[in-house]
Length: 51
Image (cartoon, rainbow, N blue to C red; front, side, top):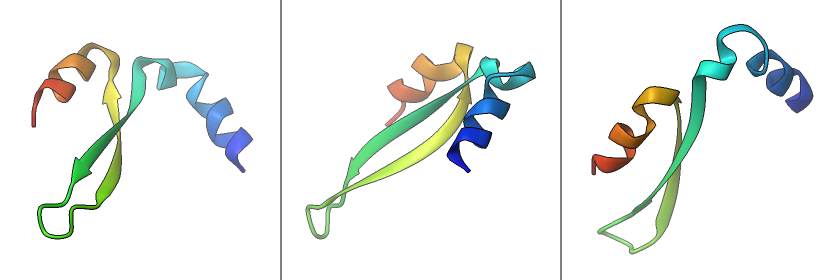
């Protein structure tokens, strides 16, 4: 199944997006969690600069 997803992102308009994984620390427990987001390539730096 993963191969199908990768294959569909490599063709057509899928090359215009990047998968951004952001690590956030919980203030309650101190544990880390990860959030994945698909962002257009030209907006990656802008997305990562936001907190």
